[in-house]
Length: 117
Image (cartoon, rainbow, N blue to C red; front, side):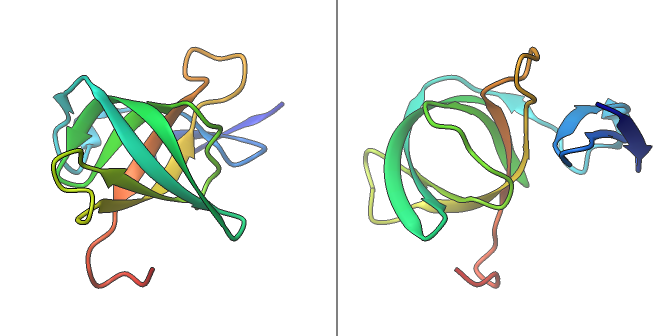
């Protein structure tokens, strides 16, 4: 499978981001985090709830390991245990490639209230 370097990112033929080439160009610093969280996933017209582990967070997104395979463009909501009626909404921006060190890892981009559901 061929790789394409574009905008400092490696893309596979399936359009999944494999690795960021230049960590100095991040839009916001990541803060390591750990812990379990429940997520609600909207994919293919269905909504399901799953467990996930948080790897790190920033003001623009988060990186998680989910108990379900996430797809590019899926909508994900973090369901805080102390306030499940106020979830934080994200969209899947990238997923790790199968059989790679990042398999099961997903990068989520935070959606602002101005983005449609």
